[in-house]
Image (cartoon, rainbow, N blue to C red):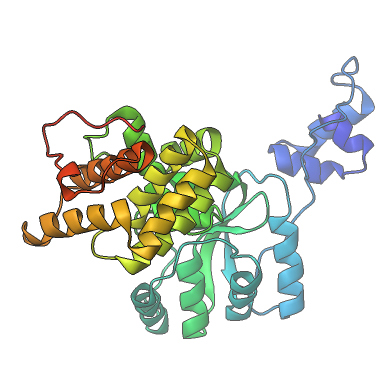
Length: 340
């Protein structure tokens, strides 16, 4: 690898600094004293150019130039302390924060207050940028620096795998919805809940309280879900939920609609969805049954019961039987209904 770096024109002392060795050893490799028989590598060579440190006293143009040199490298081994000016923080937030979680105003205000009172030391927490060059972690600290108009002295690390956001829990723990939002998935809250329910349906539909790590949920979404189809189900479920917010959560409903489409086809499910929009037939009856059970139980209904009642409505719709509230008689302890 050293020979390859020399061949493409890197300076000996920069190569030595990258590998943490004396520059004389690099010279010996160049002259053939060491490793004369080893061929020069030509692929996957690291970028060993020296990089500057961010400094709030540089011009904003020069800060951005140094910053771009840092963030666009493929790999950096260590975190280093940099000083991010408020102007550079604003540049990052505006241009490189494409899919981070929703910011907390109270957290930003708290951080900014500490910065204004000079109570914000270097803590060891890092501002993290991915291989793509985009911000992965640290938006609250950057926003607070802008809010307080104070430079942020902090460790920063570059070249991290962009998928690592799934397991980053610095500060407030990232929810499934946070992870989906950071991944740039549309309607992240409803979609993440729908995926969670699809995993529950697959494993044990009675286990309503089962939770999944962000990385596990995202992996299931990435490998086992028809994303376009689920996005359509999320749209259907959102429309129904907006009409009956109290009784039909969009996440679990989207998951059920996805299961129904997989069992039949999109056209059939669209007809079923239209019954909810028009408040007719099986949809009207099941909504009435869910509302009555909810109201008779102090405003609460077990999610498994609600899901089972919706499956009963779907099965009745598919069978074309008589519309009757008596269809919806499922209770906890009964065998979970199969989707027809």
